[in-house]
Length: 229
Image 1 (tube, helix red, strand yellow):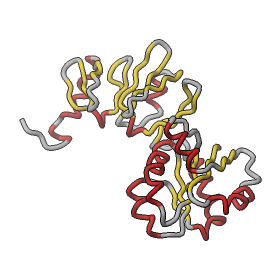
Image 2 (cartoon, rainbow, N blue to C red; image 1 turned 90 degrees about the vertical axis):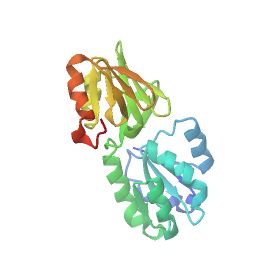
Image 3 (cartoon, helix red, strand yellow; image 1 turned 135 degrees about the horizontal axis):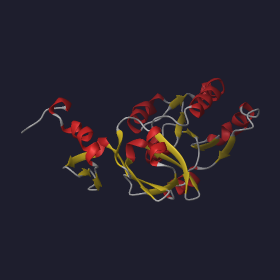
């Protein structure tokens, strides 16, 4: 498991963290200052399973980073100020630990989140020489080209991996539907459709095979919400 420790004044707890995880040989812990984290976020290669961010009453300067971190890995926030909580619930996090309970709660939190590494918030894969952790709510669609699967996300990033389309669908929740031999879409972004094509919120037009059009048409049934004819 790859673990990153960063944020505000984490240095004071470095020895304590190293000591509490010394028997976990499968844990690789990196202690980085926040500028290193920012640099990697900018390059979209913050490759880790769990990120532990230390912060205090100066949480404001970390909000942007915390939101980005939450979208690419599990996030644990360590802070002794309760003022941070409204910000956290707005930005997103997986676990909050007070500094005074670090030793008693951090090992359990890391173990729990590590076991949830393939949780239903992210699709985890390897492609293009990188380890990817793609938020499911950002995936618009995926298409198969030869033996390569191309995943298109909301940030206009295309991740190419070695995976069959059938294996891809099996790893995803029910809102992801195969609509064609070569395409899977996130139906949360389905905006319009006709007999042979579906249009997503981002403007992408996806072919829909005849045998799958009927099932997809159920998303436009009045039973799924108020309808105006």
